[in-house]
Amino acid sequence: MAEIVTIGLDIAKSVFQVHGVDAAGQVVVRRQLRRSHVLKFFAGLAPCVVGVEACATSHYWSRQLQALGHDVKLMPPSYVKPYVKRQKNDMADAEAICEAVTRPTMRFVETKTPEQQSVLMLHRIRLMLVCQRTMLSNTIRAHMAEFGIVAPIGRRGLEELLAVLSDVDDERVPAMARDCLVAVAEQLLLVKGKILDMDRRIAACHLLATALVATVPDPRAFASARNFAAWIGLVPKQNSSGGKERLGGITKQGNRYLRSMLTVGALAVIRYAERHGTKRPWIMKLLARRPTKVAAVALANKMARMAWAIMAKGERYREPVVVAA
Image (cartoon, rainbow, N blue to C red; front, side, top):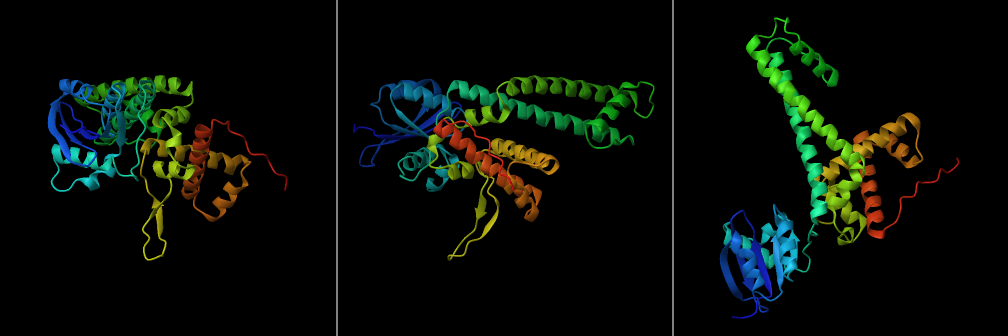
């Protein structure tokens, strides 16, 4: 059997698909592997390039295969999809991965360490709990409205509804409905407590900083700060043709969580600047000619570029010097 130099591995929960080629691009192996046989199969191969889609469990398998001496390259699934020739199935996916990993212009995802995945898990579980908090709050509001009890939006309005539920003498809410909504309210309080606990853990090492470090194992994988901002999705969407440039809203590609965190942080900076002034006069000039949210995206883009420079070059942030008028 010819020596395998490149393998496309389509990972799954139980059944994995392998597509391997030699130096001439000829297919050497095409087979299915059960989960328990994957490491045994790769342990018997000479070190080679293994392409894997960056999806669920991909970082785990990357670490395992790297330990066996293989050069594992993770790729975004959206970049692999164009190489699927016809119908989608495991065999076609593995072949597409094998072809995509050899492309000189392909962009890869750095493998995360267990520690980085642990920090990222903290952020993701917190985000899930925040969504659950919103869902539970809306549930209470919607069901209370069925009995004609409507409260203002925001935290205070929700507290008013919870006060109504705690008042057993309030006859507007039937007993059965009250019992059901009290159970939802108890779940809401539990979720809020978990979020507060996670916020304390994250705040101890800074929220956005930990998210950046956990999501971007190697900032040098990006050629420039602009590439990093584009990966997060903070650059205009292009629809240019025939030499005519057409720019729209932001692309919203890449990491949604980082983009959200940077944008929220930028909005906070802008609100503070509007009330108390700022050392960055360009923000005020931008606000004078652009809407607040457009300015926030511009600032988020700048923050992303600064974060990349700090991580890639190992420097410290330097506060801008106030220039006298």
